[in-house]
Length: 307
Image (cartoon, rainbow, N blue to C red; front, side):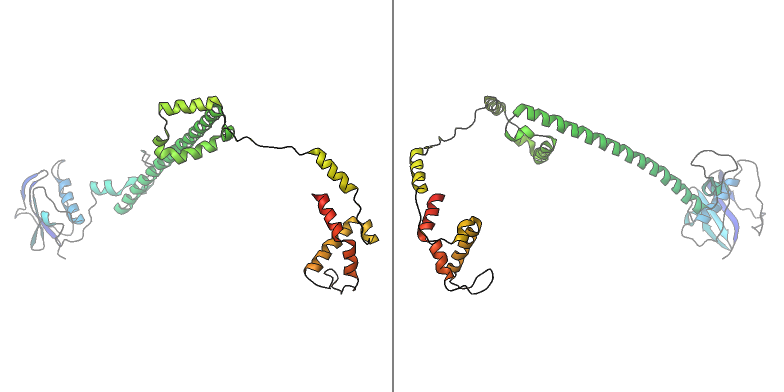
């Protein structure tokens, strides 16, 4: 790539009104020194080179440079083939060198970050830290507001449930508390207008509560038992004698008698001759003997006693 040889023209740009490279000026060489009074245009010249480095077109006035034997307008810097240059001027320092101390002015002993990219990232980091700090504070504020709101809502639920309980004093409302109020509130709050009573309905409900009048119940018909007849039947049963072939062991042990009687019923119902307890064949005369003990008269008498 050819090198920059001349600043051919600078017209209407910054301090330059109408500058043209004169024939008595030598072209740029390997090393060049530009000097002059303050305000003579040195910074403007460095900014033109800076625009070339950043490939930023110059839109103010007319700027033309010569590269090799070609003239290139400053308005085409963004799209033209330009030599790679680096400019270290005041603009570079402001954008590439800054002090790291959380944004506070510091002494010369501070740490410096060099390089435009690094400086930009460091600035972004410092901005992000500030934003994070602000967001954390907002989070704390929101959490505090949420906590206070929950406390206030809980107190409203408690106070309202107490008012409802003391006002109604009926049925399930005797145990009315904030949990039941919250459940009811969650059910109706989106369409609560449908639950609002007009003045007439409100007055009727209050009157009905204050009256404390329950619903009428049907009269119960009850006929007391005839105790004389019961006494006569009991006397008759107590004087009844049942004749049966008594088995001594069953007569002396009521619990055993009940167990054997139930087993006899199962054996007869299932028509078997095997004992369900020991799985042995019953003796031939065992069933008739038990039937004689628990005869029909005996069974009927037990049923009458139960009745």
